[in-house]
View 1: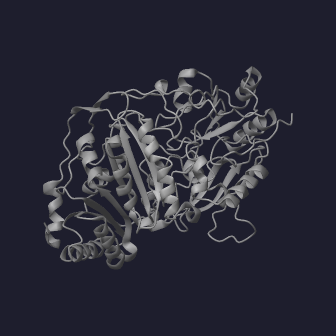
View 2: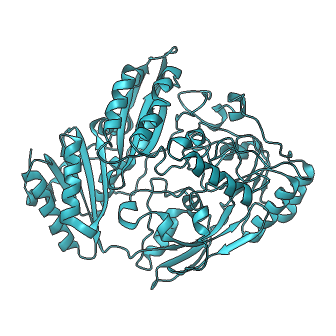
View 3: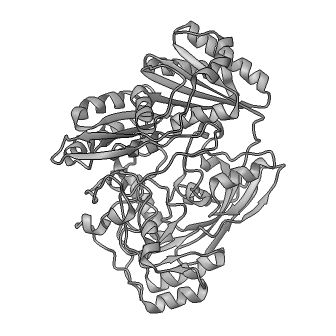
Length: 561
């Protein structure tokens, strides 16, 4: 039903309830050979807006082969990537020996990890789908320490993997074989913040949420916001060119990163750590490292432009009957809200059902085929709220929205956002998650979900679609109780072919990493990939920096020792 603007401002407090209990539901699904049942633990968000969803090990799938599966996935239950993918060949790198460990201990006294139990989580990706067999984890604190380590590895022909918060979704931050892991976890110093220019300079291991809290004390905000903000590192964000919900308002990291410092594969330190917004002197080298996923060097420091913190934020959740209506609302938002619109997200009914069933969440709206989440942020709360209310009245009067609610209180804003940001956690509860992150022209955006839902039919527990309409980024997910080759065969490579046919990108914000590198030609021409390989060869001729990632069939450098 339609509601008027004044009612919109009050309806939220009466309808949105997050209940604090734990419920368990048995789900049995058997499209493939083996029946599997999973106990579903339902964790809730506190009504105070400061709680967090319990994170359970993810059952996300690899693109090639199937890891060991269980109802509760842990690092120890994941098979080694090298043992699953027997066709994968280890590069001609050296193997870490006792002399190497002695050198590392000399440089990083007390910060060299060789204990297998401690290495377990660093060898395994966050989604518990790919697993390496590194024998050593190094934890430097300074750029100079990183330089000394990398130079040694270069000379010894030891392959390395840079690792930040290890929250990536494409296997880019963990070893494939036995590469040396170099963690930026202890490189977490905030170096400076200029409240006038907004330039923040920090080490690469700073956690995104920590940075956001720090700059807010100076009246600023970070230009990106991710679901993993409580654990992801800014260096990893830059290395993967992370997107998130604020990209609509502030743009990508290619625009907000002012400069960076990185250690090159031979150990040389490249200092391009400028706080300047304009520097037109030669090649803009920082752009090479943004989105390079650690294949060209290790980012050690970042200079990033932080915009002014909004004085007021308000959020609206709307229900509508078709995806075309979602697009109609988006157009209306651009017209009515203009520069104060900071996010425009959507979820389909299957996604809302997912978070209700698997996380026991409650929506402030009744069931609708589609939902839109609109966020406004600006300098005048009364003015922004008035503009939002007028927009909502307009879209309801013309039938684009059927119902809606507005939140201006921080707790209510948190709870509405939780419905959207909890999708990934909810998917874990189903069992096995086939996850796709694509960008498409908006005229083809949801058609892909409809095509794939019809294609997989009974071969999946559910097909859910949600994402960032504001920047054309669709998150499309399928779940099964366990990895199913028949389901995978229906999804890939069909989904990539479809995206390529409609001029989309197979990776909107997650990167290519290990899992998607062979599909790069669906989004890039052979000449473009060849040029990337040329750059990789020029910067990293020995091929030691994060091998087996991003580029397909790249020949490693020969052992020159």
